[in-house]
Image 1 (tube, one colour):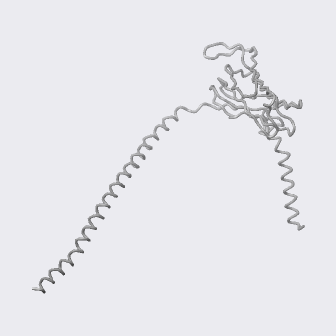
Image 2 (cartoon, rainbow, N blue to C red):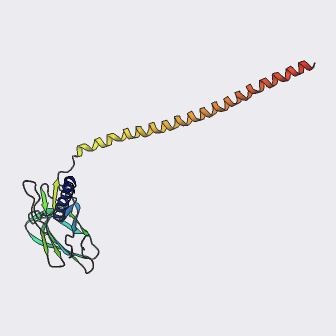
Image 3 (cartoon, rainbow, N blue to C red):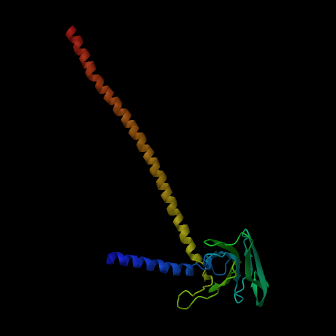
Length: 246
């Protein structure tokens, strides 16, 4: 084997090894979308991939931070799974629509019925509606994923300050400012342009039809002129024959 081929084989093997190592580490529980508007309501999905080659995921526990309580939390039913939203007393009550809230959902647990587990090579999504969201910052959902073989993966590591990904990152929902309402008129200003474009398109169609009709008329007139010109030599020949005969 040449040196070039040998180098290619080694490089390929190294690439496969890197993918084999990096693949499972990147398949963690995530929240999607991972951003939401400050002070608003959002529907998020906790996406749970199964990382085991032999066991299935049977339970998922998502913890909501007690220091960022959310007044309204509701779950969407998932066929074959039972969801339980556990409320706890708040150390400091919060207000929602002028109502004082003394307890809030701080943990949601989904448990699979037999035959509905997340099997190897599969994933499942669990939808949650929540609000009102904090005015800024982020929400870290520390999550536990339980497998049929008893193994529990703790996705609880908070984001690092240097931007690197921790070993077992928790799902994170980033809170972004609401869109500036002053930008709305610019969208409306674009409407007349679109209408003008539509009008010009309609005018172009009308002009095209008029041109087609004019062309047809010109063709008919040209045909009549050609027919009239063709008859003149015949008439001249007829007159000549009559003169010679006389």
